Length: 392
Ligand code: PLP
Image 1: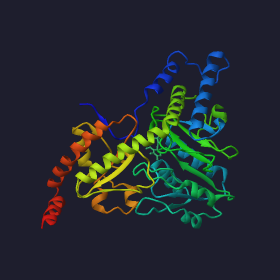
Image 2: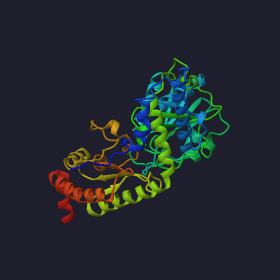
Image 3: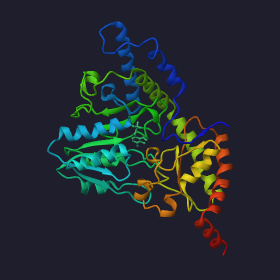
Image 4: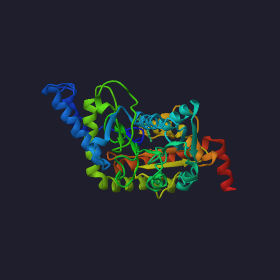
């Protein structure tokens, strides 16, 4: 049985082209990019090429990109930089549905005495940009709002938020970890100060990320030490992974339009097929403003974990909520913030696709899922009641 991997918002398969680009920098070209000699210098040059490739993905300038170890580090760095450079300001605005990389750092700052405003979302998982206007005040150091949600794929109107902050001494950060490489991003049109990217969400390896920092933005490093990344992020560079991220960004940029169409078609076929074949199924999130690869579907009256275990028997990988919170039966904070009914929160499954998924794989899932759902419903007391009621 070959694995059908529909958990690409958790992590993606490193692209063969990415591995090929990286390999020489794990074998032959192992010099330290900070060294004076030519052996190190050629590595330094290659890092700068990767920086330009990552910059091109979001229409930034190469010098506005700094490499980090992951999306989490990029998010933490953005928040910390803002509060360090505006020491008098003790207020942060974010949303209730951010990834723990932002939420838990905000909780941490909250324990240190910061006031944190968590903006609510509506039933579709959308924020109201106008709410931000009322929330921001003279004490606000940073607004951090994700570009696209990892659980539902819902895309926030980040461009509409930016003008509300214009001319105020407030940093604006967006966690674009799930958006980068999946939808067009253009920092020339979206005036954020900082934007986070993670390699393993776009077919680069795990353990590499990037933070865009707009030219002229005051900045405070998170990792302090050597002079790497112009003193903005110390530590000898993860050379091969940086080169891998560069290649992944180039692949994503050059194939973006084609992949959006391809993934949207596959996703919609999967979603429609499941809604048609599984009673009491509902889509969570704003379907008009969503990443093309993500479907979050609730199968009411069943536990999502039970569905995942049954899918696993067919070697089909999906997720019930965020990968980082799986393993615990805590209902998803994102779906709770959307007021998704209790019976649906627990039965939610996230399918997230990539360029490597095929129509045949979708066919298999569409064949297997209705059987799984029916079997689990028969076992569930709620499901049995539901059936009795619908026939009675
Ligand atoms: N932000 C979002 C929206 C994510 O989905 C993730 C990972 O799931 C992260 C941040 C953290 O990225 P990383 O795993 O690279 O630390």
